[in-house]
Length: 138
Image (cartoon, rainbow, N blue to C red; front, side, top):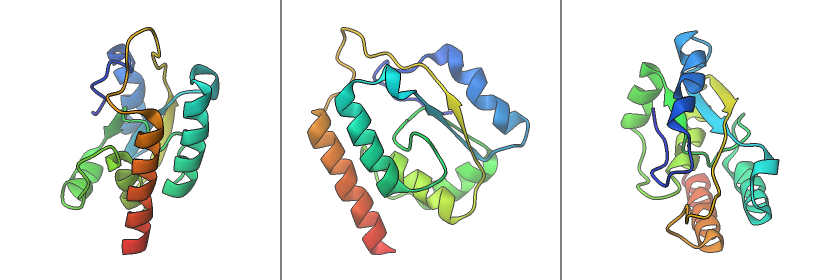
């Protein structure tokens, strides 16, 4: 189980993400928030990064994830990124290895507290650069 450390995700939603794993319906489950929950600038960035990342998921950048043993064993030996692009790398590798995906709608908090340590534009450009680098390596 993974979730971002910035307070955006609701730990009480963990059981929802585990259902497809428990039912052996998915190897990797990724939370997704509806566009209505997101500030406009994040919607644009998400669309670009979802397209660049590829994979059969609605929110490739969401850090709220559940993995089964197969996914953990595969990704533990292959992930190279140690920055904000790890979600994209994880999704691309899992897709390349034909892991089964599921996504589960989650809630995300964008309240009065700062939810990210990076400027959203700099963050998005940095992740996009990493994704382009991953594509170029392949």
